[in-house]
Image (cartoon, rainbow, N blue to C red; front, top):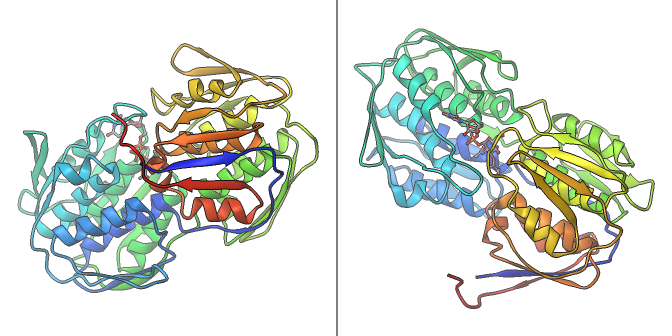
Amino acid sequence: MDKLLVRGGRRLSGELRISGAKNSALPILAATLLSAEPVTLRNVPHLHDVTTMIELLGCLGVEVIVDDEMNVEVLGGSLSGCRAPYEVVKTMRASFTVLGPLLARYGRAEVSLPGGCAIGSRPVDQHLKGLAALGANVVVDDGYVIADDGGGLKGARILMDVTTVGGTQNLMMAAALAQGTTVLENAAREPEIVDLAECLIAMGAHISGQGTDTISIEGVDELHGAQHRIMPDRVETGTYLIAVAATGGNVLIKHARPQTLDAVLIKLSEAGAVIEQGADWVSLSMSRGRPKAVDIRTAPHPGFPTDMQAQFLALNAIAEGTSRVTETIFENRFMHVPEINRLGANIALEGAKTAVIEGVAKLHGAPVMATDLRASFSLVIAGLVAEGETLIDRIYHIDRGYERIEEKLVQLGASVERIRGGRMDA
Ligand code: EPU
């Protein structure tokens, strides 16, 4: 199992190019199942999860061509299967987004229930309830969602009880080929939803209201081939901004879309960063030695993203003052707290939802364990500011969502090294 060795104490500075967004690329790859014609995707990040999704498309009988710049051409044609097996879905929850497209195009789907994961129980009831409202027959049998289109999906008004990103995506894709109009209310407003809608529109779908909480989808008979460029990864952008801020450095980030990151940029400014931005770039320089402690409360977009909570908590760990970080989206997303405390931070959990952070002037390197994707990067940030060496175990979590992490950090002047292989931990 690979580990990451971080030697702390260097101020990060320089320029960085942001990759395509993982959380956009995954559902958009699933959306290609809706067309019999080729769909070409550009700016696809080279990540473990993307490879898994491409493998899943292969299992369903779709041919995919990837060039050396990660332009991905999904050839379409007819599907040869409709089963997304447990072995795939358990490694990546986003594979559940093939459910909507399979039902809409193939008329039948067998998709393993994703089950819980490290950050929470993550049910899919809203996906299933919405598909049933579109006329699908849905049963859960032996851990699989088995569904058919009930003779053809039909548009409906669906008011979701919970704002869900994956649920909104699954229903938007299913409704794209349903008969009549679907209105999704209390829909997720995340930029990745907008990116998916734009790709579907390029494929011939009739969608409006994406980016608001009410999305209308007028079903069409079929979707056609298209080209789409995956949006820049807002979480990767925010993560590097926080890492640079924590080290007191400065950075110019290119190929980004800072307007998708307002809540994080505002909090970084409150912490003492000077931020400038244009349409596709954002720069940060730290105006003070130590950041100022800032309270955070996660919320669906446009609130502060849960996917940036762990990284900001690491920044608060070395800030001047006391802060409270409240997680409202997932029930178990503080597993990084005991690990950051191993480096000398002073963070206490107040119930399951709130961390109280007394900023400390210094952290000290120590061996730590990554527990999930975003939590892993919070350990990298803590390691970058700690004195001495921090060895982060189980970094396969990081490789799921951060492209060429060592290369990008080294480019900014960090001392980071991947230690390959080693004993498999229990
Ligand atoms: N929920 C339900 N019922 C449902 C669906 C969701 O109760 O049917 C609950 C979940 O349990 C959770 C909340 O609603 O408490 C939000 O879950 P959501 O469905 O919005 O999350 P997701 O679609 O499973 C995506 C991202 C996550 C990100 C969340 C929230 C992808 C592939 N994943 O997950 O990203 O944290 O939205 O923004 O897009 C990550 O990249 O590290 C990551 C975890």
